[in-house]
Image (cartoon, rainbow, N blue to C red; front, side):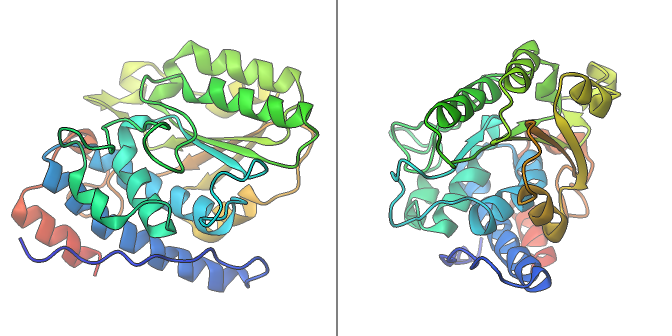
Length: 287
């Protein structure tokens, strides 16, 4: 395998940057994160690259253009919170944190190795920037609702964003958390569903049909917005839209394995490791 591509540390995109310029910069950042992420997974010999690649545009948009989070002061009590509820996609989060300057890039080469702080599921006690230990599906959204409620009780402007998988929404704990969030009027909470239609081994439709997902979330008292999860400008507008008095539920329609030709929409890449030839092709397609 060739020398891994370097991962630059990108600064936050300044507020007020014209939308098209911000979107172009986010596309560049997301491409760099994907190029490093594939090598993280290939080096470890394990990971969830399909879900990583469906979520990276969302992660890049949040960290570099939405979250009130200073990499120089990650413990600021008034920072915005982000929870990766689909914690099995930890490599995407770690690579994003490294690109943002919250994790040393060299640590990425230790992913899932014995003694590494970069576990298969994120651990807030080991990694700066991880707000909650996740991986057991259905836990992240309840924790995020708690963060948002605490901010409301503190009369704090801090916001909470949580990213779930669509297959994860089969877990009932998510719906209890949504009902609670709506009851308390947590307009500072944004729930993002990575809707790629696939989960381990099958489609979500074949496993447990979720439709009509938007209608269900609306009935639970959330403001529902549907958007392409790969359109950086649309994601920016959605995440930065003024609050409406309700928690926001963003259905981010994505493609598992995006944008790689042989991975896109292929359920086999939920939990599969690319070999050297496939890594080379992925890097070529992302060049």
